[in-house]
Amino acid sequence: MHPLFARPARLLLYLAAWLPAGALLAAALWVVTPRPFGQALAFAMPLAVFYGAVCLSAWWVCRSRPIVADDPLPAVLMQLAAAVQASAVWLAVGVIWAAALSRMFHIEPDRIGRLRDAATLFVLGVALYLLSAVVHYLLLALEASHQAVERMLASQVSAREAELRALRAQLNPHFLFNSLNSINALIGGDREAARRMCEGLGDFLRRTLQLGAREAVTLGEELALVDRYLTIEQVRFGDRLRLERAIDPATLDCLLPPLLLQPLVENAIKHGVADRLDGGTVRLAAERRAGQLVVTLENPVDVDAPARPGEGLGLENVRRRLAMLGPREGSLVVAREPDRFRVTLSLVAREMDRSAKEPAHV
Image 1 (cartoon, rainbow, N blue to C red):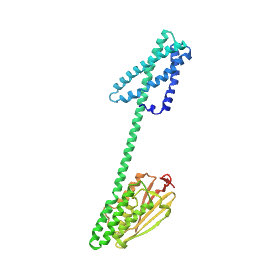
Image 2 (cartoon, one colour; image 1 turned 135 degrees about the vertical axis):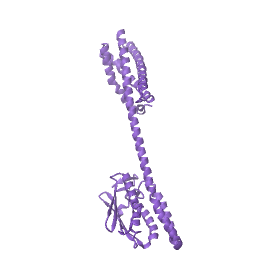
Image 3 (spheres, helix red, strand yellow; image 1 turned 180 degrees about the vertical axis):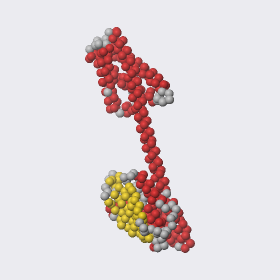
Image 4 (tube, rainbow, N blue to C red; image 1 turned 30 degrees about the vertical axis):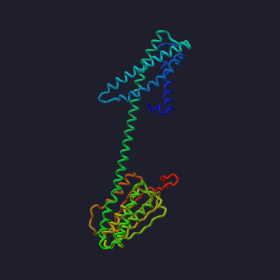
C-alpha cells in the first residue's frame, strides 16, 4: 500500500498540491488554444487532481522495477510504458470531461482546439508521470536508507547487549574458582567453615543472577550483594580482611549498572589483602557530589609483592561497561600511591521515579 494511503490527511494534502499544477495546465491550454481562462480552469483543475491520484501508481511500478546501476534500461522502459498508459487514461478522462462540460455548460473549443488539447494532455501526462516516478524512486531510496540505518542501529544495540552479557559473564568464573579452591582446602580441616562458605556462595550466586538480569539497581542493592561476597571472603581470610565503610544514606537509592562494585571489591581484596601476611583494610565510601554518585574504594599495597598475571581484569571490565553507557554517564579514575591504591567511580546521580517507575535525574 502506498504510504500516503495510511494517512488520509497527507493524501488530501498531496492532492491539494496538484491544484497549482491544474492552474499551470489551464495556462498551457489557454496558450495552445485561446479561450476564456475561466473555461480553461474549469477543464484543467479537476483533471489535474485526478492525474495526481493516477501518478501515485508510479510507487508500485518503482517498487516492482528498481533501478539497477549496471543495467537501468529495463526500469526506464517500464516507466515509459507506464507513463504512456497513464497518459492515455488521462486523455480518455479528459475527453469525457470535455464532453460533459460541453453538454452542461457549452464549453468546448473547436475541432482543431480539441486536437491541440488532446496532444497537450498526452505530452504533459507522460512528462508528469515520469517526474512522479523520479520522485518515488527518491522516496524509496530514502526509505531504504532509513531502514539500513535502523538495521545498523539494531545491530549495534545487539552487539552492545552481547558485549555487556559477556562482560557480566566474566565476573563470576574467577571468583568462583577461588571460592571452590578455598572450600576444598577447608573440607579437611574445618568442615563447618566449608559449609558456611558453600551456603554463602550459593546465596551470592543466586543474588547475582537476580540483579544481573536488570538494567539498573540501587546502590543499596549493590552493597547488599557486596556484603554477601565479603561474607564468603571473610571465611577465607578471617581477621586478615577488614572493612571500613563511609556510606552517605542519601546515596543508597542512586542507580548504577548491576554487578559494578563487586569486581572492584574483589580486585581490592586480591591485590590489597591476599598479598599481605597481616592482611589489610579495605575502605569503601559513597557520597553525592555536584549531581554525581561518587564511590571510592581504597586498599593497601604491598610494594614487595610480585606481579600477578591477570591483574587489572576487574578494572578493565568496569571501564568497558562504563564506556558502553557513554562518556558523560560515568568514569573510573585509578590513583596509585606508595602504600595505597585508590579507585574512584563516578556516575550521574539518578534515582528511581517511584510514580513513573523510570530513572530520574536528581
